[in-house]
Image (tube, rainbow, N blue to C red):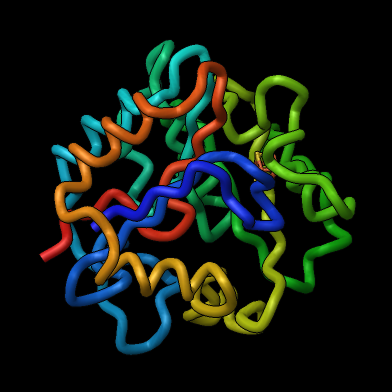
Length: 229
Ligand code: SF4
């Protein structure tokens, strides 16, 4: 199920286009079962949805930019090609992030809350820098990086760090801690199960094509590439 929002009210993204993705029976159904951030009782799946992935790669607004994140293993994520959506490997450890970079995937690292003062840092010769929206009020993905947000730079030579925050922060690194497990994001996400479009791939292609020239599109704010059962 896919929910599309042409102008997000999310404080972090700013007023860009976004989507949410969920299964009919489980909100986390499109997330990999291996994700360490799942709340207890949510399982996720093991397979990537090929139809959705194909649509996702192509779903870039005309003259615009699209990016997203995936908790599936970095080796399963496609290598980015010019003109495609940038898919960041979402990593739970510094080691995983370094491996993703080595595999040629742009990487982000969700770091424990007590590391807030540890960034920027260099690990394995790679720079780790914190998401600027976490460091300044009124900073959003919409105004990040000038005309190209950092997470939409597929060939960057640094890892973007998100430091755990909010109600779930104590769970990061210990199991649980998904940022979408509570608050307005969770409301939108749970609603996707009943109000989203049933054919994700078709809905996504149509949505990207409907956006104004030069739009920024952040795919699946919550949810992932998985095949929902
Ligand atoms: S680094 Fe920039 S694009 Fe990435 S999440 Fe932070 S503000 Fe958004």
